[in-house]
Image (cartoon, rainbow, N blue to C red):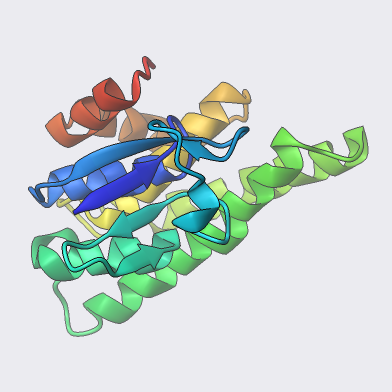
Length: 195
């Protein structure tokens, strides 16, 4: 199995989750500017969407999109999803919220067309982090155990930190807790990221 990733990109969430699940996988670094793999292969041949993440299974099938990959990882290791009757549905709900309401907004912060657009996106991200803060059920999103959604939220918080976007105190504590997890440390080390 292979994970195609770019250091610090949203694929960090999948990288963390795959380590949390104890999966055995190779890492293939992508240069998102040149659209080449680290061995010079055109990335568009792997993912015509031209962005990470991509997980290539041992049989050659490929998965793309954080929601799909993270929910797949949770199926491999059910402890990484909420365990109640609606656990799978709640996990997808939370992954979709992070993807559409937080992740997508960062594009307007990283590459704004105007100062007004960047300011509006920063405000929206702040509002969404405040909402997530209120939704947290304990030390992690769904209680006292980390889920694949926590890996995604952590990745978004690394971006918020990088872009100096203020987050609620509970999310700051969550961020620090996640930084200490062995899977997070390993993924950051593999990607050459120091926080």
